[in-house]
Image 1 (cartoon, rainbow, N blue to C red):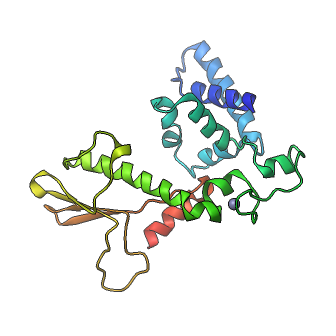
Image 2 (image 1 turned 60 degrees about the vertical axis):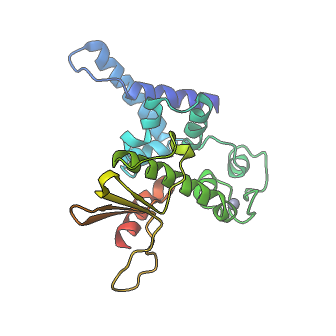
Length: 229
Ligand SMILES: [Zn+2]
């Protein structure tokens, strides 16, 4: 597993190097980089994430932003890379690839295969509490950044201490930010409580934000669902 992590980190580092066409060394490096990326992509299991990036299911810039920002601890970062590369020892992996187990079912729900995708976004046991907590933390960070951007007075210095209020108003009342508030509509729609609403009181416009945390292959589906709602 370590070699996969090292390879992934090396490729990501190399991919972020600027290309200079006229320089022979740079040209060779670029060719090597492409070669490594191809090898990575062609790995049926470990190459799933990079194939999804190339198929533009997820944004290349956004998905690797955390690596260039360096906000995460090295262990956290490598854990994420390992999960993206399907290199964590799930029961599915232990049963189908390593043949060290005979039962591939999830340790929590005992219903579905314990794959990384299942743990990240599809386990009914984790859905009861953990996925909701994660969703609310993402909303809290987003809410904190929106408040900062729109000059709402904040009690806390860091996003992780921030507890969003139902209604916030910026200095001078130009913007109102609503968290988890019902929207009045002419016809009844099932999900009418967007996570965040930014109301521009000067122009009379609103932006509705709904947060969904899905795994790679469901990003486009989730985005379409949100637009159609
Ligand atoms: Zn499960």
